[in-house]
Image 1 (cartoon, one colour):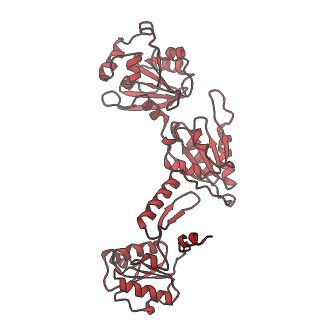
Image 2: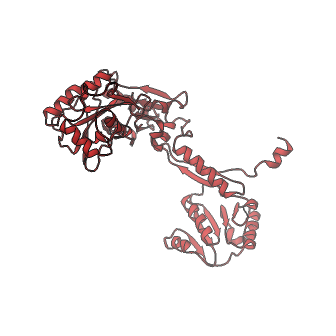
Length: 449
């Protein structure tokens, strides 16, 4: 190292001290000393404070039996005998300097709040980030600039919490000490995942993912992270659910961190409950991280709220191949069908047969939030034929209800100006919605977003 580099090298050797049960003296009992005493108590230290007067926070700690308080002035080296660390924060520069000098004679490290650069020890800006493998402690020293240290600490902690910085454990866990996180990936874009989801993904050894999970989220993982694709397509389920359950449990029992990455939310038609039960039966630690379900978010991407004052007071979510006869048929209730592209003709016919008005507005939203997002609208009795006309393909979400008239796609394809949604809904029910034959040339029933 050159002389110039040595001159600018930071002074100090960063350490993490284990103060559990060990005596520490804090000289002073004002607000600064109280904050430092609280931090020392959190680390497990046995704290004794020396000061003639105490602020309210110190009195509270004393009343709770958390500290000892010698209510007098600092007396000299005898106050520091047998301690592991000294912190002086009296607010008086001469007293703090005296405490620091006495600690140096006793070879005890001292944090001097009056003059941090001259202290034999300094307090960094600290953040603790929780992970399934235990906490990660971040400590930043700004070398005389506390605000700089806290700014850097907060940025690092945020990166660890949102998954943009790696948290993966590299030392092997004991066999059986693995964990599973059932993570909802939301409707597709990685920025619609929760920060908890991204943080867990950044710490995963194994990712078991669905076809509709956000695949871009795994692109930046370490090359040795195992990605198991258990995706299903309509009519083709190469991984039966019991085998998926077994795969998740097998990796966790081998000491791996497993993220089960799903599209939407694990508990909304995602079989997350079955997977959690399998983990619990095997004694595997499991966590569920909610995701933004496509049942609500994909209609929203098309401008369709599933509830709206004056139009819909509630909604039901089912799959397109479920029995639809027992569903509410009221005008003020929205129906959302997932996985319904193939079954759309029979689903629409069943709803009408059970009492749904044939003129009920309906919409099919393909590839929600994707580059190929497309919206097809029409009356319930014609939505299947319109979908077939434009070649609707999965994945898609079907919405049935008057809320469809709030979307600009309805106005451009089927009905009047949506600035009057009540009129749009009435128009649909009175039969004034243009039929495919009466629509002007080029008014296709699907519009690219």
